[in-house]
Length: 133
Image 1 (cartoon, rainbow, N blue to C red):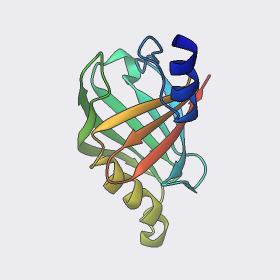
Image 2 (cartoon, helix red, strand yellow):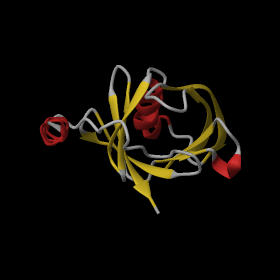
Image 3 (cartoon, helix red, strand yellow):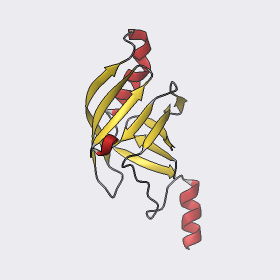
Image 4 (cartoon, rainbow, N blue to C red):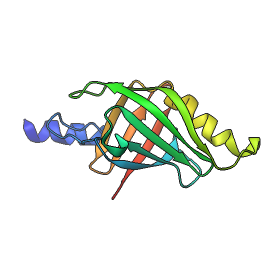
């Protein structure tokens, strides 16, 4: 029975309950938005500097800080109150991918673990992340 459950959950990309990934003080590369690759170099750092509930998003064009909320033992997660900390390039056309990402982050309500090094943030769109060392 347990083998059947594990086989069926693996086929659906569902991770059994005992499998957890800690987000605290981790850094992730944003790989894709709805399966489409995002511009390279965008990262998300959870609890940067050891501060609970703070996520730093670095793109090629700047650095933004978000507040993070959610529960510690489930899949609920949300991001709010973005604050631009540093703009590296102020040309408007360059910011379109950033605006698309931040609009998607604003709708995130849950996250899913794909494996130790891959998670997906889920809202009206899906944001795929890969863990960095």
